[in-house]
Image 1 (tube, helix red, strand yellow):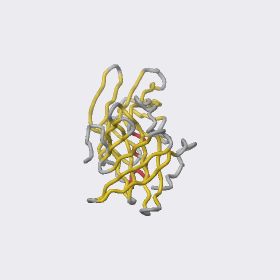
Image 2 (cartoon, helix red, strand yellow):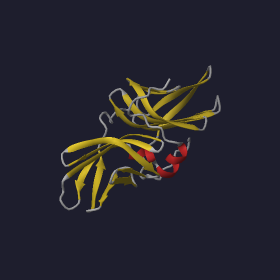
Image 3 (cartoon, helix red, strand yellow):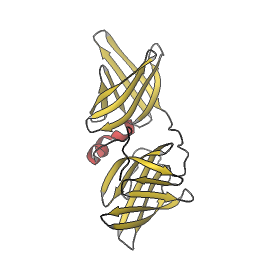
Image 4 (cartoon, one colour):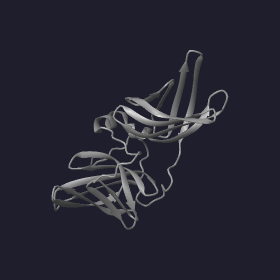
Length: 210
C-alpha cells in the first residue's frame, strides 16, 4: 500500500511527459532583481491542477494552494516556472508594477544516498522491464517515479536502509550500482534486475525502459 503524505504528488504521465511538472516540486531560494532581497518558493506537492505551496517574501511565509497550468504555477500575483529543473523564474505582477526573481533549487537532505538516481533493467526470464527513479530522499521519505508494465506512478516511498518501498513495488541495492526491483500484480510477484544509469548530461535524456 502506498504511503501517502503531505509531500505526495499526483501527476498524470501525460503532463509529466509534456511539461515535466515534477521538476517544479522542491524548495527554491533566490533574490529579487533590482533590490536583491531574499525570496523563496516551495512546491510541497502537485495534485492535478492544484499545488500546495509556500511563498516566502519580505520576511514572512504564505502557505496556500496554487493553480497548475502546464509548466507553470500561479499563486495570487505570482507565477513560477522552470525550464531545466535547476533554476526557477518567479514573476510578480500587480496594479502597481512588476518584479522578477531567479531562484535555485535547494538540495534535498540525504541526497547522497546510494539509492539516488535512475535505475532500469529487463528480465529475460519473465519478459518484463522496470524502471525506478529516486528524485529526492528526506529522512525516511523518498520522492520516486516507478514504471512497471508500461504504467508510471509517482509519489512518496518509505526508506529503510538500502530499500525504498512504494505502493506494490520496491527497489534495493547493496553497492549503489546494481540492484533489483520487486513488484506485485495481484497475487503474483515479479523481480527485475536493474542497474543505475550514469547521471544525464542534459534534461533531454531518455529513459529507455519507461
